Image (cartoon, rainbow, N blue to C red; front, side):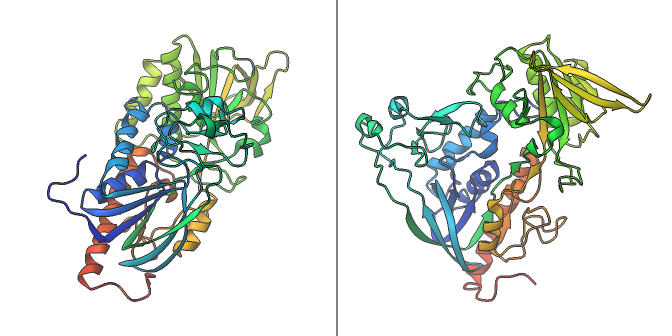
Length: 449
């Protein structure tokens, strides 16, 4: 997508987008192509969010990074977008048409002269677990999150850096400064979009599934990294315990969601479909594998979703079992996992042995959303997601005039829905700027009554 013909940058007409996942990227591009200045802020070293961690998307099975990377590059190169990665919003004052924003630029300890060659990472003696690979792999103390990161500038992990100086000595462009300090910047914007994303529920609190205790019980996001060619196993679906190929794999749906026990009693919307996608990925890698999906209800409500599930069953032999396992136990001799579940037809407890179990956890709000909500003065619901004013008719508007939300920070949803909502938020943000500019600025309290 190119800059609209005839579009001009109006510096006094700017929008702040908080969060650089796919919804924040889409909103930024839509606004920039209207001729508005966009400040895209993300607290991580690269934009991309959760979508950058995925291998494929459903129901088309397109490469996730192949879709996302061109949009990321366009954000970096767009003349109307200022990309502020490794940065956090500290304070916001004012009202629609005139928000004053304070942003802290965290000390990356590497400046823009970095060419992304990676020599510093190769020579660094420190190895720590890689959060981008869901801690299944390792990285150095100076790193880029993943090969397609935008911007492709290395970051020093100050918590683990031992300051041996080898990275500085190896850097030909002289881009590394281990004494770099945080700095603040102030901007004025007319409207704000929050697109801060989501986390996944930590299944370790559900002791019956053994996550964190049995190495061959993993989350669906960890599975995405195993299946990805750029992941820690170069795309080989193996057991973390011993590196053996996983031939019999079981998925368990609704882990943490639709549960009074955990407090997340809602449906996470995308789990049935991404489990189906991951099951097909397994069969593509190894057609002889056995794949089982344990579910409560199948939520396949999107375009082409039911056909996708039908293909998984009929073409790939994925087996869906309408049961929720109550317990997983490990065989200590082999590392195999024994799943126990009730068969209500004959009131017996059935058992299944699997090489690998993939848990599909609830989508939950990020803990940082509470702080952002406080800064923005917007309301959140009982689960910590940003609350919209009227979901059917004002699905991106918050209680504060000029502040909008999109993507999974507003509630669980899949990628197409997040992108569609991002475009809606961009339209509303642009509309507020146009209206307040026409009125000479909105001076009243920004809270919608």
